[in-house]
Image (cartoon, rainbow, N blue to C red; front, side, top):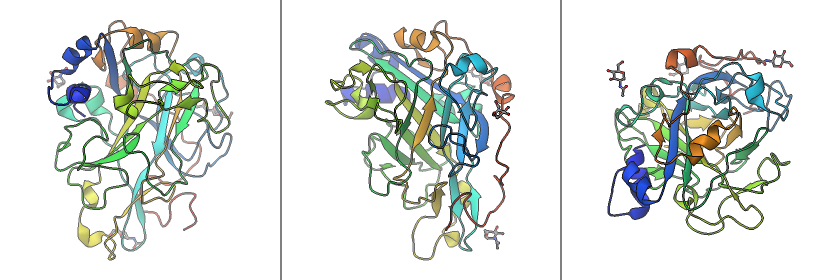
Length: 357
Ligand SMILES: *[C@@H]1O[C@H](CO)[C@@H](O)[C@H](O)[C@H]1NC(C)=O
Ligand SMILES: *[C@@H]1O[C@H](CO)[C@@H](O)[C@H](O)[C@H]1NC(C)=O
Ligand SMILES: *[C@@H]1O[C@H](CO)[C@@H](O)[C@H](O)[C@H]1NC(C)=O
């Protein structure tokens, strides 16, 4: 996504650069950086702790502490490497994988791409298989970074009815090289949809998942992994809500965390291979071809005060920010976690792992 356009969005007509807009707001930071794949596995330490395998497959990025069980505590203390551009970010970020279902009923996993070249740093364009992560802070007022042990979940894999578009949406890329990557996430009336696109996307499909920006200030987690955080009670939702008011129950403003996943669906764009009833053939790993059940998990794992440094900085855009420490892509890609559930991840398969269909 073109973040200068993104940050200019609240001003509608005038479109200054991201930095220019940030200065006018009195200080905005948008960390936007890639994290390469650390493992693909059927684990979910938040929702199904200790379960090997968990209910469905995930694409996981970040630190190498990721495991079937991740007890509370400071994961940055246990991890020895990370796949993220910021070398002190040992957090884990994960989402569902996407699969193509062929006419004969077989499935094949759709590969994830890196970030669009024209708007990105050299690290983030090379994270094929990874996820692009955003942390945004904007005035007015302070944004409080997450604390060690903090975790949260957004979305619900059981949901099959539409979401709030500005919190969870899909962009249908119109052509090669991320064609149509030209508006704030979930804000384009035509290219962004609440459900998975119903027709061929010539440049692939992007998923944006936006986490709540308000915290109860006390709990690092909650039984449903959601109730300790909330979306703003007033003002527009999600990315446009940075100035929105937090409800009294969740008074602490936290960074706007967003995941951006790009699937290279282009090898599956031949409509002759699509279902004869005209439906679209892509399924999320928990057996959903509506896309409404898209969800994302987060376990905070930045070392020390590093994320707060970023959130307190002004005018940082992208994958570099003042004193925050980076690493190069080769080092990031050398970091991985061994898969614990041995299942096929690349070949054609007769059913989605864990799904009775
Ligand atoms: C995951 O947990 C298992 C069991 O506690 C342990 O044997 C393994 O080393 C852990 N893996 C990582 C990557 O920490
Ligand atoms: C199903 O269709 C796909 C795509 O045409 C093909 O590659 C695969 O081999 C087929 N699988 C079976 C079991 O026939
Ligand atoms: C990215 O890498 C390419 C090739 O290694 C180089 O030509 C280009 O200048 C780099 N761009 C930036 C912004 O570092």
